Length: 139
Image 1 (tube, rainbow, N blue to C red):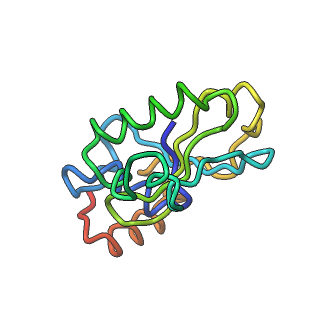
Image 2 (image 1 turned 120 degrees about the horizontal axis):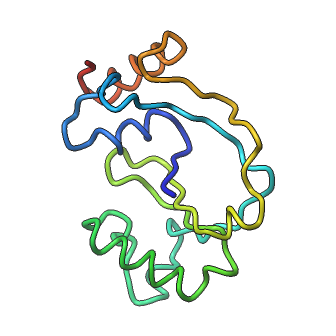
C-alpha cells in the first residue's frame, strides 16, 4: 500500500499524470488514519541505498525500478519491517510504502480519522489547497 504523510502529497501522486484532481469520476475518497502502533520502516532517505549498491536516487527513479527495489527489499526484510519510508518523486515529501506485515501485525485502526468523498464539502478545503500548492486543476 502506498501512503503519504499528508493529503497534498497523496493528491500529487494520484493525479500526477493528468495534473487534474477529478472529484467525481469513480467516486474518489480521501481517507486519513494513524497507525495503532509504531511502524518499523526502512528509511531510504538515509545512506542505506548506498550501503546496498544503490543510490538515494532509487526513490526517484522510474516506477519499474523503484518497484523492483521494493520487491527485493520485501523479499529479504518483509517479515521484519512494516515497509519503506521514502520521498515522493512528485513533491519530495514523505511517503510510506507498507508491506503486508503492517496488516498482519494489526497496524490499522478500526475506523479512519477522516473519510470523505472528494466531491463532498468535507473534502473541499483540502482539495482546493492541494490544487493551489501543486498547480493542479480541479473538476
